[in-house]
Amino acid sequence: AQKVTQAQTEISVVEKEDVTLDCVYETRDTTYYLFWYKQPPSGELVFLIRRNSFDEQNEISGRYSWNFQKSTSSFNFTITASQVVDSAVYFCALSEWSQKLVFGQGTRLTINP
Amino acid sequence: DAGVTQSPTHLIKTRGQHVTLRCSPISGHKSVSWYQQVLGQGPQFIFQYYEKEERGRGNFPDRFSARQFPNYSSELNVNALLLGDSALYLCASSLLATGGAETQYFGPGTRLLVL
Image 1 (cartoon, rainbow over the protein chains, first blue to last red):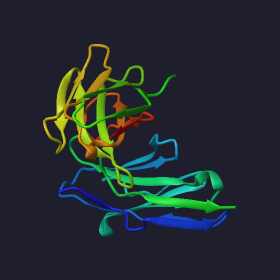
Image 2 (spheres, chains in turn yellow, red; image 1 turned 180 degrees about the vertical axis):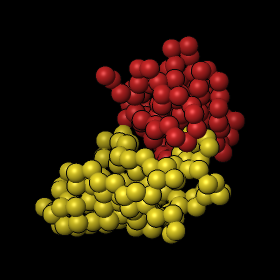
Image 3 (tube, rainbow over the protein chains, first blue to last red; image 1 turned 90 degrees about the vertical axis):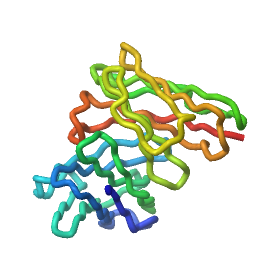
């Protein structure tokens, strides 16, 4: 069965600190896809990244970076030099052969000035 | 280009009533999915439609139904509303329906409150 666990319910840091959001997943498939979405207070889920199970290369996009490790079934997300605008709820999600996305519970990130 | 649009943005209903939520996908996208997000939780998959056919259904009662129109827009219908149906309903669209590789883009959602 598919499952995504985001153990950190809430994180609060001061602006300019680095912060890592953890994501652990469970799946029986060898082919699967992992996603991160950002949900600001407005409610809309904003797509950040998609990775497939065959590509373990880490990715960096500006201040954002993602670390995918199949050995530990983790897909962690790091924000470097955080900014107040990064405050939001962040969701990790998993899909297998179908398009059904299975989401974690989300991590509420608060960046304090 | 416009993103996924949903209407209405907010809705208040009473128990037992029926509700229809609407979604227009990104231009060119043929697949639409619906999710329910209860306060404090992650979204839960309800339905996926592609080319007017149901491609997937989550663990929701038969009170929930949906359809997709020739222009790829979609409606989600919920009958006999319960208090527990109060949630943010999110619509997502993707280009095709080729499985998990498709990135889904979400709309702003419809906030439903059942009293």
